[in-house]
Amino acid sequence: LVVAGVYAILLLSQTASTANAFAAVDRRRLVLSGTTANGDGNAPAIINGANGDSNSKYKNDPTAFTIGILGDLHIDPRKMDDYYAGRQHFLPIFEEAKNAHGNCALVSLGDLGESKNCDHNPAVPTELFAGTSQCHEIAADFLGSFGVPYEVIGGNHDLEGIDEFLTDEENLDVFLKCHGKQVPHFARLVADKTYIVGLCSTVFRDAAYTSHEVMVDCKQIAWFEDFLNTHPADEGWKVFVFTHAPPNGSGLRVLQENHVINGCCWLNHSDEKQCRKFIELVREHRSVKAWFSGHFHLGQDYQDSITFPTIDPKEGPYPNRGSCVFVQTSVMRSGSSRDGRQQSRLIRGNKDGFEICTVDHKDGGKIRLDATITYRDDTHEVGVYAHGDIADKDEKFFKVYQPSAGDELHPPDDGYIGDKWTEDGTLLVVDEITQDTKAWWNMACGRVLGMLNGMLIEYDPSTLAPLGLVVGADELVGKKIAVINSGLEECLIDDGELNIGMEGAECEGMEAVEQAVVLIDEKDGQVTVVQPNEDGSFWRKIVRNKMIRMKEARRIKAAKLFAEELGLGEDAKVVPSWGPYMSTSGTAKKTGVAGLTAKAEV
Image 1: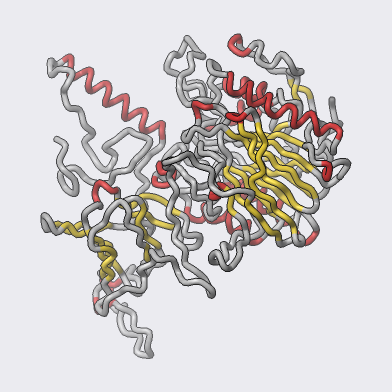
Image 2: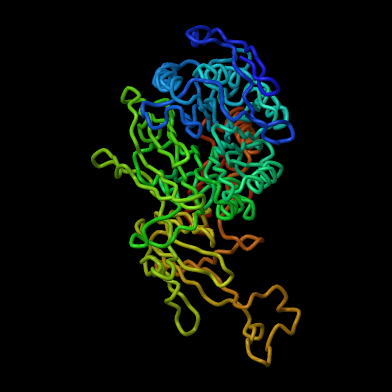
């Protein structure tokens, strides 16, 4: 099937390990990027494919559409059973739609391959499977076997072919070619006045900090903003967005702790301006109706895996999320799940609204309605949850505490202590910090700090979403926190007519009120000053680029072997010599400095 000017046929190679995986379907697949190289979004109004649902209200409706959404696949070619089963769950859904409307597509949220060696390349037995040519070829065959066109965007592991490719550009080029894409992003018109749009992570080796931050490059951001400008809500446009990680401000709270504290939770997490850009666009452009993401490997059984743009004022403050519903997506394979769930998402919609459903792969592909969104007009909608949290008995999952600043109808939440300053300008945050302490406050500079699971966390001042770790529980639990004035008295700005202060060079760089955050350990009489970063932020960008950490790990390994050759034995202690980079781990939960703010290790 070829649609002139849009689709082309691409034949893919198949490895021996998956040679019979997709025999039941035509292994030819359509080149699916509905976006041209210039990003002008030339996609057909109706996609020729097979999809649909059993609800008759969508039959023969040109505004109807159905989208299947797959979370982090992390394909391991040795363990394909869950993928085969998951596909079988979707095929009847797609097949049934052939007699409904035909407006359908499959979207993959990225992270296509397992980030470990999968016995896939005997020539390089340590090579990671994720990001390799073989990974993307197998993923393309799998995604192309559902009987409907597919779109895919890259996650934080899709450029991880570090043994095969020297640069991100080379790796990205193979990703695009394997999936028939001209550009990293996509835009596809799936029904009348309805687009699906995807933004792709394009940085791994060149990451300034952790390589697992999902980074959408500036060119895509500019394209996305222009796309929204030319598809306004008041003209009836409806846009559904897909990214690997959610944007800051989404309100999603069922998150992975390691993503929250290590700066890879939100899109463009480490860039303050870009991190906030996405929610600003959502607030400005009410054509954005939903935003789907994965990344956390957590299930869809919790209400906090879906957030609505509007809530009943009786339930809390206005969330300020434009007209957008934010939706978290789980995983298909059991080995990739962090809470035992194996689930995908399904969207069914038309001009009146849409339904968000779960396809439960552990329950034979059973479809469950999770939420219904009804359009009141082009810029307003009402969302209704179909069920509460569905959790096993005594199940515990990480649910991030997000402060609430309140609004004209609601006070700040009980954790807010920013109104408890003493006359001398000191804020004693808490007498003794525990793992359960909840408290947050605004610094005079505008930054927001608060407590989470015994850790000090910085929050975004606009969205109050967690940004990252400031002080780890290892250094904080059992101590007190105080915020004190630290500026020179003669440098304080007088707001009266005299305009006192700021006269001398010693006052250069002074804020109107300069403050210091201090940790107080009354047991040993030690006070630790929590210094901000040079840019004024507090959260610690401790986890570095994976390429750098791998080199450090190799140096340590070489040093251990050398120590054994010198006769120092296998138990010889080998440690790095400098700075906060004392670990080559990709996860950092501790901030204590051995021998200073924590017990000495050597």
